[in-house]
Image (cartoon, rainbow, N blue to C red; front, side):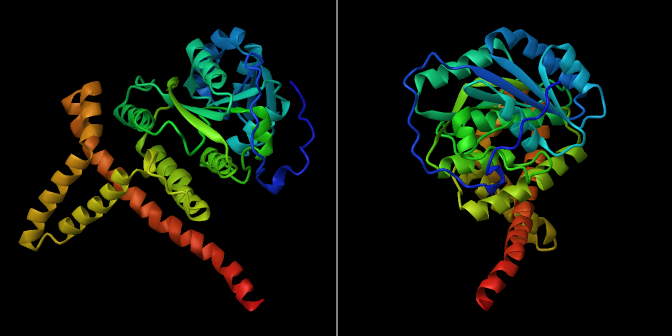
Length: 361
């Protein structure tokens, strides 16, 4: 097991380089370091390691960072013959990924999660994308359309994620830690992941915003795919979606003012949130007869606005699955709107002391 190197100078200053990236004209010197953070990985991590063993001959190195696991994740990675780093206590995937990047020797850093698997094609297509675009700073991929967990909620959530990436703009505006690659020199120019995110959150999105603000190009390559194995349950899904993603992302949007018409922020999603709350208002005002007519109209409009998504689910899983998707999808719009309100309040409340001090000075 390797010891950690000393901290990079200026690492926690979180300043962004504005230097224009000059692409390396030599395309064949691309080498890949795969970095996988893990915390109590369990069976999913075993499958992840098996897939990594298959791609090991095609990469320079595979680095696993154990973030204070209490199970046998470290031992499994060591038995697989990979480079293993370990923290005594958990500090979040942002810190773990940064530590892996500190010891990495590849010119490309490829990040993936411990509950995903990949193939040789994943690596080959990723490297080819960087060869084709010497000006490319970073690349993100997509989940495939065959999620590992068989239960409905896992199938729904992971297929929705697949659809979101497959229909998004290829000129990406964010980074993605579950399947994302970045040139190592650029990663350190923008100071890596923000370690103030102490749990799996939006540390990858935040990194992408800094990359874009510094003028770097990020590509969404829809052919670079990994399989997500995570078994979602109601509690874990809502907790992750609302508290670990939506609310922090809202605060980040206020900070950076990057409200792009892409991914989860598409205009159709914003309109659907408004429609969902209008429909809810009609249900609350059920004593008013006209509200039921209006509510039916709003429900029909919600179906029409999201018809492409429901057609996708119908093609992949059939009618019954799609009918079960619709209420969950509308619930998604509801808690996105709720998170928008909470995140907005939190952002402005946290800014009040700074605004008061400025006013007094």
